[in-house]
Image 1 (spheres, each protein chain N blue to C red):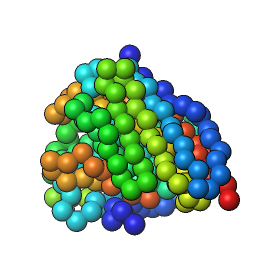
Image 2 (cartoon, one colour; image 1 turned 30 degrees about the vertical axis):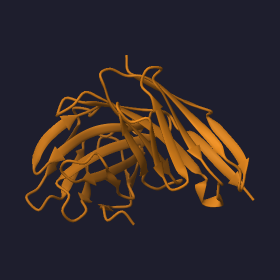
Image 3 (spheres, rainbow over the protein chains, first blue to last red; image 1 turned 90 degrees about the vertical axis):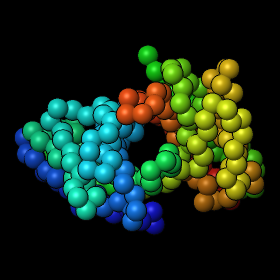
Image 4 (tube, rainbow over the protein chains, first blue to last red; image 1 turned 90 degrees about the horizontal axis):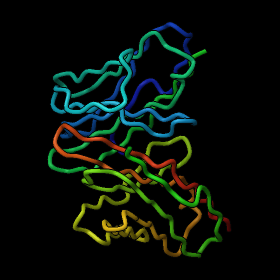
Length: 112
Length: 114
């Protein structure tokens, strides 16, 4: 158990819909990272937040957005969903001054 | 274009044997290289992180090497166990601060048989 929690574990929705994925980092970790893992694209870095502020952007689509709240939990919002958005979405957290990231168990999203 | 190539794509070994996984990268400017272990359906777990100045780093039975000149890294697993069956992913970070890019390899799927 990494100490990172993600909800929900599974999510099934339809094309065009919007969903919100939630992540609670390990106690004391200020950084939250979001990743997408699909069969054809592999693992991809989406975005990083640090202490409530956006820190770095990866391959995040404009239809996707994220935020980190004062209690440090983070949400990833996916809108206008397409079939190709079906994937595992991981959240990871890390401490300041270290590159080590601790991954959560992931949210499996299926868009029908 | 930043690329990370891992080989082999998959590997089957017997319990107790050693194995070596390869990672070649064309990433610039290099910041660090990470190896992750990912069990099926679970989140990746960090094994090692190596910067430019580090040649070797160990984590138990896992030893990673880095040759920054040839842009190659390897992950050596000693005395394999059934629990080592997983996908091993090489990730290279380019750039620093808030202007960085992470490039992921497609992973090597390792199966350890009894």
